[in-house]
Amino acid sequence: MNSKNAFLFVLITIALDSTGLGIIIPSLPSLVADVSKISIEESAEVYGYIIGCYALMQFAFSPLIGALSDRYGRKPILLGSLFGLGIDYVFMFFAPSLVWLIVGRCLAGMFGASFTTATAYIADISSPEEKTKNFGMVGAAFGIGFIIGPALGGLLSDFGMRAPFLLAATLSLLNLIYGSLVLKESLPKENRRSFSWERANPVGAFFQLKRYKNFAWIFVVLFLLYFSAMAIQSTWNYYTVEKFKWTIKEVGISLTVVGVCIAIVQGALAGVISKRLGNVKTAYFSLIITITTMIAIGLATQSWMLYLFMIPYACSGLADPAIRAIMSNKTSDSEQGELQGIITSVLSIAEILGPPVMMAIFYFFSTKGYNKTPIYGMPFFVGSLGVFVALLLFYRIVRKPK
Image 1 (tube, rainbow, N blue to C red):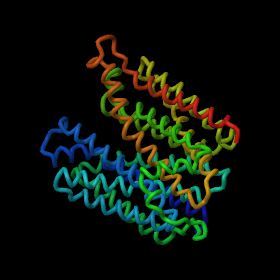
Image 2: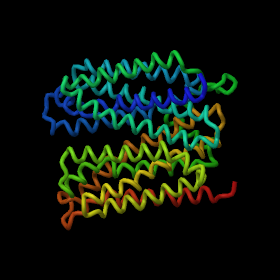
Image 3: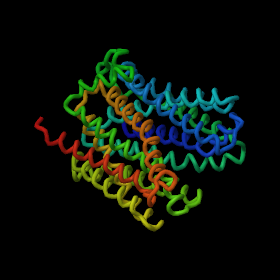
Image 4: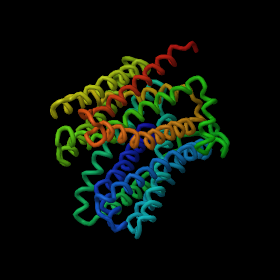
């Protein structure tokens, strides 16, 4: 199997994984309410904890998955994660109570850490010049799957709230069979390193930051970038409904448009822009565009403005692949899995902390929590400030002498 076919398989795997996750989104709130014997409205708080469990398990297991792939190779870990996800979706299909549903989501987060191995595989088979483009394709594949998933989930809900889990299981297990037949190992035995529990747990993984002291602060840049992005991802529904009186259908359409724009930018433009500007300037460009568009979205006074700003906001997706490429090019082949595991853990922390913080800011400055004129866009202003700090840090990092 040549590198192009391997690359295509990994992209399909990531797209199917995110499709499987997206499929369950429309029906999960109803399923939570059903097994908890409560109303949909009352299930909102429980639903938030279930989502948090997924991110928490990704944080906990990403370093372990990355370390195992550095020791035993990418293929067995990648295929094992696919098998685990498939079985987990079957498990959730039969989950009889809320406790079992939570356990299922925890298992999904654990096996979903395969994203770490997938990105390490991409790093293995990519030349330094191609890494930004290829990491961008990874983001595009994830975005495409997450666009398709909710649409399929909505259609399947007519066959019962548990039906989407069955299709998600089928997709994961079919991809497992395909991968076991065609996927070849990307990490030669001579490039593997010994396994260490000290480096494979999330706490120990952070202590390994000293091994990457030349660019350790870049982890902070990535954290700030993703933490700030939670302003959009967490409050978009509430912001558009409260400020512009959007319906659920309008919110769904807007999210699809955003996803399509980001997928196009990461898939088609990341490599072109990075080749022309270089990774550092590409990251600068993306961070500046992110700051500007987040402020513009927060200041928008008409619905059509949001769609106008979505186009440049899609360029916010260029920073991640450019920064990952910078870090990957400075890391040995035997430590690519560990590096991607630490990155995933950092991003998982942002996904755990970001939503409650941004929702609290929105609540305080909305009509319910703020006595003066409501400032619905405050989370976006705070998010833009976070990205601005990330920009300053990144500038300081790249300006330091080697």
